[in-house]
Length: 604
Image (cartoon, rainbow, N blue to C red; front, side, top):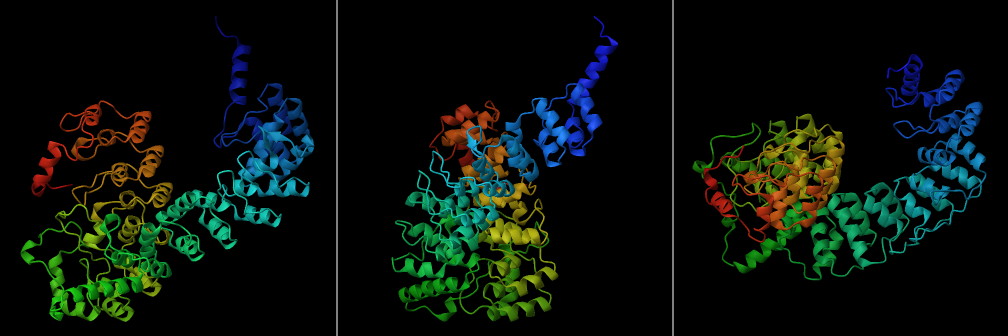
């Protein structure tokens, strides 16, 4: 049956009243914002939905209240506009005028929305204006929910320092734990809100009653790479009473330069030759962190121990060693990368920069001078044209795949200068054209959040190819630094970009790299942010192949839930199901053949 003219007209009206404009507004919401009474009346007559929200969740009733249009407010209420929903919207958006009007309409401070009090709802959303209105009307701020959480616990989820300060001024106690024994500081640390956490530390807020929860919170800060926050927690005694924390504390004490903590740990027999993650010894950790006093002290001890065990050693035994020029590949893959043979040209300069044996990776005289704190020597070299970006990555891939690339190749002068807070040299290097992107790679690979943020502020490019033909995000993934990964992704880092492999064990994508570093939280984060679950890594394998082989049930479940191809075949025809049967086998025959013949393989 043909549709009549009136029916066509009604269809057009309905379509118009329920449409969104370019800004995501409904016609009724726009009329309420503008106070356009005639358009408003026409829309109401044509049955526009009084509760239809904008794309961003705003409601016509809230808009009418916020702009003080009394006639529109009353008409919407007569049209059954949902005052509960409007109250939630006003609190969530912290629309003070709308909240006052709607609260007046409700006339009940104990009014609950979906079982939540208005004050709790406001704290959950950090709505400081709404909270101040409720405070002026005498709302009860001592509310504690069934899980023992106070309003301060909820406020810590919002990262609002102003709100926390207001609640403390109201007399709320930060020393009340929830039913799990966790205090407000645990919440802010867990959320990664470090400015707020710093304030709570200054207020002497505990972390948790349980040692396990306290350690969990501390390690999350250490692993984030936030050097300032790490030092603040340690210096305020949050690690002092922990049992069986020496190994973890020793690692981060050397990395972040917590000198006093090292002295305490040394009394408990800390092993200065112990190898940690990526086979770092304490001296190398301290050096990368720019903690030269600690590095020099450890190096002195190691040299003394060695000399005591080798009484006939001569001074000539401590020397710079150069590999034969014949072993240096002729081709270089980056114009600011030099082969090791070049080092032989710099013997005199090295001797001028070095005070004792401190070369543990290939480097230029400029980098060595910066590492040893020789500012005047660094300036002299820069005045005479030292290349500020020269590093010694080789064209060939290193044999030892277990070593970190930082141990194998070292780091850049700009990274070294910033780690030591030598801002004068940092400025000179930047003026001389220091490559921000290479330094960003180093900071992401080693997990120094402060350095990453500094380099990004200075203009480092998120998606540039840094050292080793890899991106900053890849560096953070292979290093397992989740906080840095999240920052880079939030700023637009390409998740699925394929990179060059710097060692035989490297995978070509960020998702595979995160899995390789056992950073399952990063794996889940990347997948949730849109990483392709079917990207192919080494041997044509998807992550589903690898996780099935390893028996990683949680990762397998996540991948399948996200639609991973369960029938994908690798280059040898193996499916994920077949990979399940190779659990606990270190390498397949194909992988062993690969490692036996690796000298003949070129990676691109």
